[in-house]
Image 1 (spheres, rainbow, N blue to C red):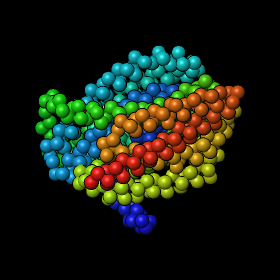
Image 2 (cartoon, rainbow, N blue to C red; image 1 turned 90 degrees about the horizontal axis):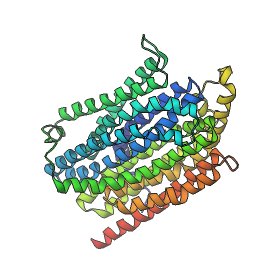
Image 3 (spheres, rainbow, N blue to C red; image 1 turned 120 degrees about the vertical axis):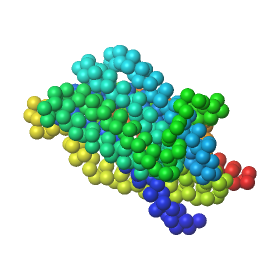
Image 4 (tube, rainbow, N blue to C red; image 1 turned 180 degrees about the horizontal axis):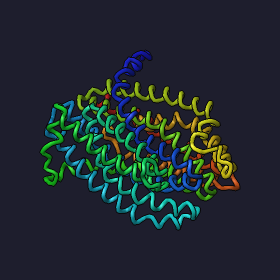
Length: 457
């Protein structure tokens, strides 16, 4: 097939994915702003935010992963013009996301003492605990927002979540500045001030997206007059069967990156701070691939509803190609700027902490070498995973992600990440191995499934 058969889809792929990318980048930008502002306070504070967020990201991955079940069901119903099924999928998804958000908050709240058992620097743990209290509570509005976002994505209305996230980011930046440093007459709370900004911004996101969806002719009937506690067993089961494996897939991936935070903590506060810098930069480029993953889920879900499997494959491959091209660009950027990007996060003019800050920059610049290489495999695995979710194939990909990250990737991180081996760089070699394995195995799964669907038809 000619290359143009794939590239001609790029424009529509971009129209669908760009708002999602910007919205997801918005979530990461909240963390980026927190890290830069907190980094001015010192390396211990930066490491504390890293440690607190490591718990947060695990819980977020379960909630966000679970919410993705809503998108393919809504996309399929939208293509089939089946309003009843679409509203039912949204209502049941919203109910389950709300319950899950509350449960995850309670789990995090009572899991805090684990920090002391993980051999993390005591100075870092004592700073992280009050920060985590507030950020954990923000899980509830965040996961409720995800239910609205996934519904909106399934309806191909990807701009609204983007608008909500942009507004939330503006609020977060202003409140962070006020409460971290005590500006505009506000008290200076240090890193806890960053948590206040995050909490407020997430409640605003929920209120805004509900308001705009209610005001839109296409979506209004879906989001009003919801009988929240009138539930159907069949739809609950359908969403749970799609959502639980998706949550596990995201958990397995996020957890290996979280293990990198904890393994870095065993090496000391400076390696942990450097790991946080490299992780934050990688997360921002990953959001571009995540946007394409959502576009892949929506477009594959649409074609599945039409049972047009030849088109499904062609469109999916156009998204895989697009993701790879973006990843190559980001890889080159990390290679070219690896010594400069980490300097954004620390204050090298601080004479008292110059040695610590210089060490953090040096370690982070080395980690960006590994991050540059795994841009391609990370992009491929998440875009292919989106396509598989669009096919509503979730169980086998869950097994694949577990094998890739925890049977292949984690042992490499654990062994080579020790101080007497390769240290921080060894931890990231394990991440590279896990992501590359996932990309290869998930692609094989998608290729096999779609060929079978074509043959059966």
